Image (cartoon, rainbow, N blue to C red; front, side, top):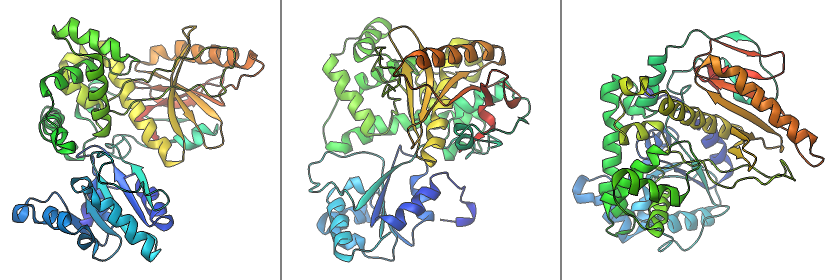
Length: 425
């Protein structure tokens, strides 16, 4: 691979740090998000288990003797290790024997069943989650505002420039796939469609050798797309399929298929936030549904930029998904975690970032600048309610993350306003 063409990723720093601490790392994430390219950038030798050359010679070699594929200059990349699960134990054993750091980089686009893996690898193999490109990584964000600095209450006011709605829609439909960055939107939209075909028609079976009803899987995927950025329950998804597609699917099957999508890194749900926030208020525990990239929802619903321009409600949900994808990528770089907040009084916060020191920040996500005032007021109201609770822990920072704003600044009421196209880690 040509290192001169490598586009730096935010996860690069974490990979370098983990290679200094652990004997091996495993970079996990959806297919085509750049795991192999990035891991190759950090390795000195490599073997590709899924390479079809020589009738899949590498895979056959690994199946006969997993330890043989470990031989090479370190760090050694072993790409798509899950094709031969015993590789995991072979790596763990080698790490134990040599006690050296940074020996192996494993990549995986599916989490295999534990059958065939004897040891968890805890303490030897560290897992890192990689996602499609954020707007900053793809060059579509100026990076004038650091999320880490913002979460510590620091922001230098700056003009960030006008944002074209059509261009913003194009970023949603295109997605963060490295292979689509330089294609026209119409052509780029073909990539997530083919991605879904490859995963459902091939990877689902290869994961554990079980034949499943791919037609019903596609129905469930379309239901997830219709419920993108919502807290739809499994029962809601089942009912949605019956109502919209006139098909029935068992709740247990929904649960099984959702687990498969999670293991294939197709979905990237946003967990609920409740720990110590408001002791006297019941907080809902439903996850917020997300694909790993909003372009997948667009593909499943056959959404074009023109259709999205005429459907502002759907656009709002997909824009939220885009922002929360980026927030998760940026937050992971400095040890923060992404959640959402929803209580039984009807109060909601689109995105919550919990920092390593236990402080938390609240974000409302709005496409239009005309929505900023209402979003800021919602954040202020929730913060006051939490502060009034004797055991409540209010957010340290309030921010409205926007699509169409042309500046990053702090309002007189203390709420920050930041365009997503100006954000970085």
